[in-house]
Length: 239
Image 1: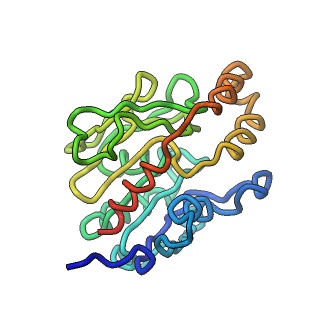
Image 2: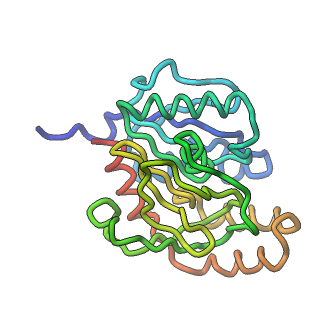
């Protein structure tokens, strides 16, 4: 049977926060950034946003063909009701649909399925490389590492029971993981653009530290491989 084309599929985007007005020249919602990432030619899946941070949730896990949990300024351990609700939805949806988590989404999946998330010592910003482990063969894209933009301080410190850690770095050992056949999570940001990252690091310079921000900005000259990650995520979400 020939699989349905990507543009006939609907992916629910579970937004973990609103985009600050300061960055509206780059994007106004996290769904917009994923639309650009997943469908640069306009032939990707339909994205249906849900403002989970504001209490807006899907009715059921099969409302969409797949689910994507975005980044957020929140911490998954903050104790907000919407975070607990999103964890429960991710667990339920993954029983019948593929679920992908990015940054905060990666951490939320880690916590929702029984792992541990904590604040790390220092910020992960700039272009970071997550080496892929040998067990990732046949699961990951045909590259040996993911070079992607990062912006996080929280990390998954202990993976959930049954998770497979596919890759990471000395700074972030649990950077990529799967749980069963339907859950994939990535700490770094394949959807983030370098222009947006440059503004983000400049504005947060005092928070993340001047030297750290300078190194992050300098790293933006390095190549990144979002295209390989895009293909992999689309293949995972659209089956």
